[in-house]
Amino acid sequence: MAVPTTTVASEPSEPGPPPPARWRRRAWSAFAARFVAVAGGGLLLYLSFPPRTVWWLALPAFALLWAALRGRGVRAGFGWGYLFGFAFLLPLLVWIGSLVGPVPWVALCVFEALFFGLAGAGMSLVSRLPAAPIWAAAVWIGGEALRARVPFGGLPWGRVGFGQPDGPLLPLASIGGEPLLSFATVLAGLALGEVVRRIVRDPGVLRRRPVALATPAVILVLTLVAGPLAALVPAAPGAPDRTVTIAAVQGNVPRLGLDFNAQRRAVLDNHVRVTEQLAADVAAGKRPKPDLVIWPENSSDIDPLQNPDAAAQIDRAARAINVPILVGAVLRNPDGRTTTNSALVWQPGVGVVERNDKRRLQPFGEYMPWRSFFQHFSSYVDRAGYFVPGPGTGAVDMAGVRVGIAICWEIAFDDLVEQSVEAGATVLAVPSNNATFGFSEMTYQQLAMSRVRAVEHDRPVIVATTSGVSATVTPDGTVTASTREFTPDVLVDRTTLKDTTTLATRLGAVPEWVLVALGVVAVGVGVVARRRTGTRVGKDEDG
Image (tube, rainbow, N blue to C red; front, top):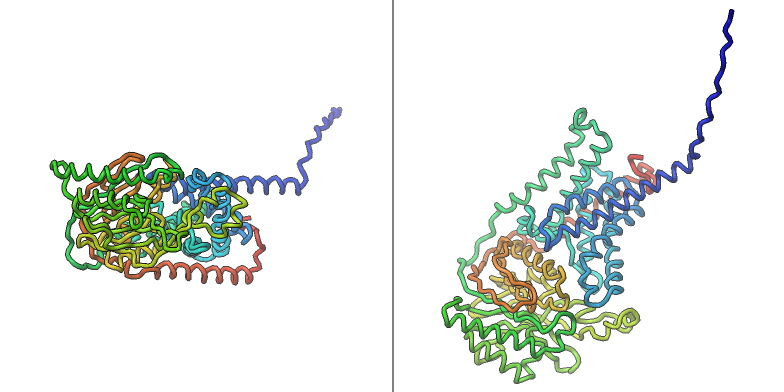
């Protein structure tokens, strides 16, 4: 007898979303992941900069950027590059907001991030070429070179190499300057990103096809060992080294912020007082007698060439220590309207015997481009300076020592420091005024630049600031002494003068232009390759 079977009806399964909905959800998830990765990468790059010493964070920063750019179209590359740059610049340049308020600070970051966007677009174009990280890193240098020159003379602040004074790649600066240091740092990060990308794409690649990781892994290893190898390359010898004693005076300011200039006489008096105390310590045998003294930028905002009282104060300090003083002074020009930011060599009992004017001025600070236009955005515009640049080689003679001068902002520009060294400087002085930026990271970012320049040109560097951080730096980039912020102090350093010539000094801008040319050629090849393969703009190679 047949037993009837009972058919139990199964519950209907809930229908899934239609394919377009699934696609949109996946697309938004991918976009959100890339957004977080790229913004996080920009933040990591910022965190790799001084005063922190976690230089290695630059590598995962560019690895994250590469994950978003690899195989993307030009418009996507521009967008991700822009986001990366904005996330990096906004915290890096926050000290600008402390001076002029949030609107100009954010506006500057919005504009400067365009250069990062251009670099991102170019990097995406070359991302499918063989050995792509090399060409992408060269494209990045092209973006930095452009940003360092336009507009209004450029903004080199935040170039990647300036964040590497504590990293193992620093010796590369002596071979190809800051651009080569930037290139190597970016290249290491991109190669790391490519290795990780290939492992994530094919988790079994290490077991089944390790050769697939060979190219990016070799690039990564060779880049990381390039720094220590560069340290073995000696500078070309010059005249024998000799040692002098140099004092850097930090007189401090009456108060923080832009209004410290309202008490200009107090600033001058502070530097006179600290110098006289140094003279007393020398007489008591507490400190060695210096051969020359460096005062910071704006240590005499009262023009000593037109104000006898200010001149008498400076000469009083010079007579007390009985050596020449490099005085940072603001001089009023004959037109009665413009001023000059100058470094004066003041000889005791004689006065000014040499003068070096600041050659490259800071836009929106020392002078205001398009003043009438920008007045609509900030009341600070009316308070911006009327400075004009001066001529010169950026070097002066003091007590038989050829001193290269990079006044504050100038230390960021490759050509200006190079000119000082070519003019015979055996030591670099960086007189600066950071009081307007309070207890921000600006002074540490600037000190990092001085450390890179020391290695680049094999020169000791003396940083003298009104309010800190003042420092003495050896030719290998080591800070041997430094001051606290907003504290009167003086550094006395036995400085070994150098007359050597590094490969970076000899080559000048050649390494940078070679890297830029490589990037431009690679972009051209990338454009042709995409047209030939009919790649759809914005479609990821990995699907």
